Amino acid sequence: MKLVCGLQDHKFPPAKEALGVVLYGARDRQSRGQAGAAVRHRITRDKLQPATKAWDFLSLALAVTAADLAGHRNESPDGWTREFELDVAVADPQFWNTQIDLIERLLSFLTTDLWSVGFEGGGISPVPDRKPAFPEEDCVVLVSGGLDSLVGAIDLSAAGRRPFAISQTVRGDAENQRNFAQMLGSGLRHLQLNHNTEVPNPESPPSQRARSLIFLAYGVLAATTLKRYHAGRDVTLYVCENGFISINPPLTGGRLGSLSTRTTHPEFLGLVQTLLAAAGLRVRIENPYQLKTKGEMLRECKDQKILRAHAAESTSCGRYKQFGYTHCGRCVPCLVRRAAFRKWGKTDKTKYVYEDLGKDDDDHARFDDVRSLAMAIQEVKSDGIENWIGTSLNTSILGDVSDLEAMIGRGLAELGSLFRAHGVK
View 1 (spheres, rainbow, N blue to C red):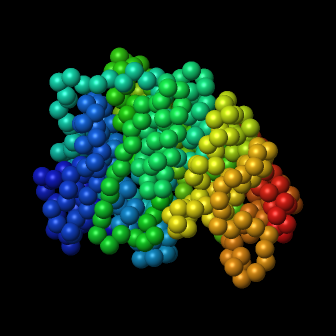
View 2 (spheres, rainbow, N blue to C red):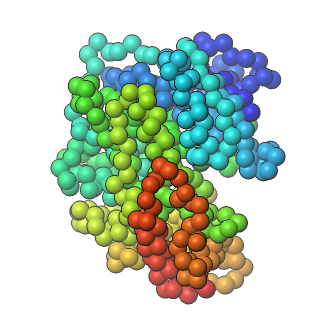
View 3 (cartoon, rainbow, N blue to C red):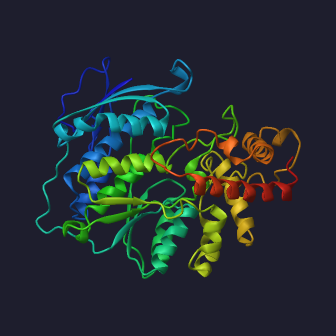
């Protein structure tokens, strides 16, 4: 599938040749897509001044998001792996075309698709406001409305940091994002953005595999607006997620019940960091919980009072929208959440559609993730953690993976405790 992505005045090819996607504006016909108009409006309204290459990185992320929504996996030869040809208009095509191998590698790792990427001129390069605002915050933190990002924001605030909170507005989480940002410290500066991507004939349900790239791009864009960045200093972008979900180990050899995304896998974040460094963007991506399980994050949170008051309000479910904005209780993120509360030793007040994991009846027969995790726990018990993980950590970027293996083992132990409590066999 070919997509050509550029501003409203871009020379798009006929629809039969490629899907045209208007970046930072509205499409002029239904046969085209659109993405990012609201982002440009908000940044301009707030008089923020991002770096030009940060805008280019966001343009790439918007183009990838459009492709992820437009590509139908069931139309691919193997029913899963899609092939994309992506042309993106940027302000500095000469630089970005030197990074194609790296970009295609990180995109393929993120979405498990095949990508061919190219860049041309004519990208966004807004004229700076005559009186731009330079936020004085000392770092950026992504706030999704989830439990891990809540812990991360709490810990940063408790340590005396002043994070600029950045969110991707999602129905069901938007209010949580605002509430979490407002309650910390004297209230965090908070920027909620929405890519508002629309394409003709989108895949349903929509793919979520590329979602972290747009979230990271928001964070990078915001980081380059800070006063310290404009003064020539580095800015840390905190991406807070427990290590077990971050690594995304395949649960079984057949990938049954495996997690759907690699949104914060250290290899993916490492590849993005390499790209940012090549672009001269002084933004350091850090996941301070890479070696922590979710239960350990809860137990070690720096402000237990705030966490106890708000933990149940957070969202973890991978099927939250499908179940009427209620946690299903049986997907992998829900199971990891429930196991973490048990490790924490606090009552889990979250409402789950499926509370009892051990039932054996028609309504509960399709608990694929529960069954897959139970199989994984048994396999580790029989064959050891190294054999079960296999090649999941086989990459030169990660170096010594013994600490990661140990963390995954502790994460499985948390899940094992949950399963025993529910009589899961």
